[in-house]
Image (cartoon, rainbow, N blue to C red; front, side, top):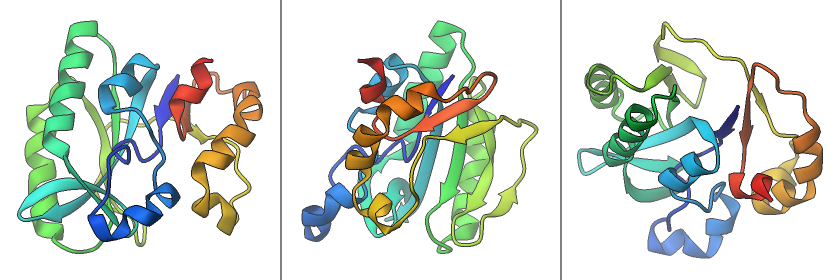
Length: 182
């Protein structure tokens, strides 16, 4: 079972941070193609921009409408009659009430998606718990400063090691999932 880390980081961030986008991008494929590559667990990081939920990763803000992406996953899960898990993480402490309210609405709307709770990244506090629980294992990384600066390099370097991980009964959460279908 596969999952994607920072699933919505495939787009361009705000223009002034584009020279540094390679440091925060963890996926090249859009959400539908991640599904086609085998992902059934999605790590959705959110920020609030002009009153709507968009994707973010650290300093980067991606102008990707999170609700639209969830509609795509909802339809894929429904059409394929497959289980799909969403880990929902707030990238900052800003707008907690807005995000919590939106989370409560979307968890009732998207009946084919299993949400694993609403988490604040800064302290990993759960603002909303979940009835669902999955075992996950993250792909092999050194977890040094280089890992955070060069995610695609490390995904390539440890591809074969990650493919050897016994993740039976667990979701293997990966950067650049397309590398694992070669």
